[in-house]
Image (tube, rainbow, N blue to C red; front, side, top):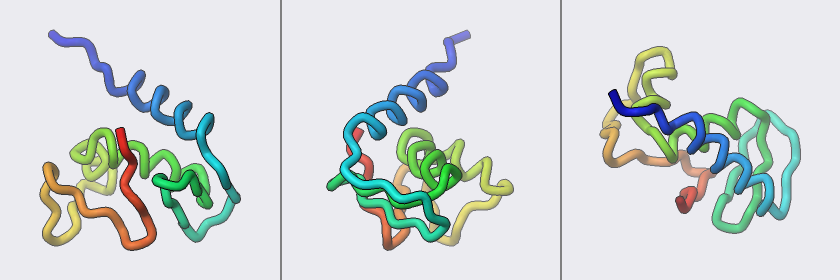
Length: 87
């Protein structure tokens, strides 16, 4: 059985984001632009964004087992106020 690398990948990516962000505001209305280092969001949005970028299948499994219409795990569409996380 292969080791589960996802927890370490998530922690590493979260640490990278925190160490390179340029702006952050704790707010419920999500405004994330990873390309320029803007992370205006709450903890839930932050973790969800990183999880969706690293493991979209896991992200959608944790979204009450539902996938949005047209979702393809290999081709995840980000919401309109999100820029992609470059991994």
